[in-house]
Length: 130
Image (cartoon, rainbow, N blue to C red; front, side, top):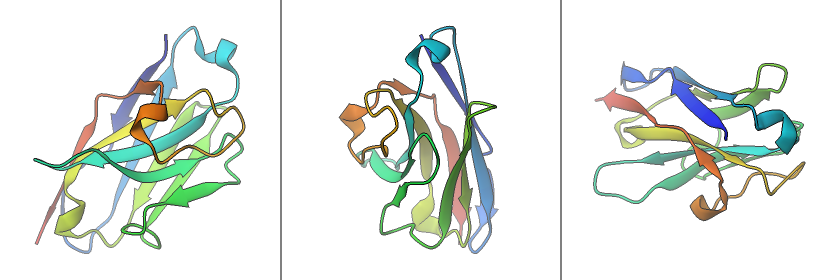
């Protein structure tokens, strides 16, 4: 089994920044080998939506149009962590943010589809005030 734990959420004013982190752990982690990671978010009354994804090497990334140019995804495989740097935040970014691991992708880029991910964190709340 694999556990994912997000941190770094909070309340910030519009125009501000936050940095989310996701730590992966579990005895099965080394057995799985390479895996892709993604960040998703879910606002009240809305479906969970894709935010960003990254490949195992970190060389390939993908972003939703709504965050492109403002958010940056990165990972440190030595520490089993993935981060999401969020700049120029606006109230529309308010949501619970989830990290997820996709072990079927191996070295490939993480998918934009929720159903492709195998493990999820519990989420961290991000609130942007106007």
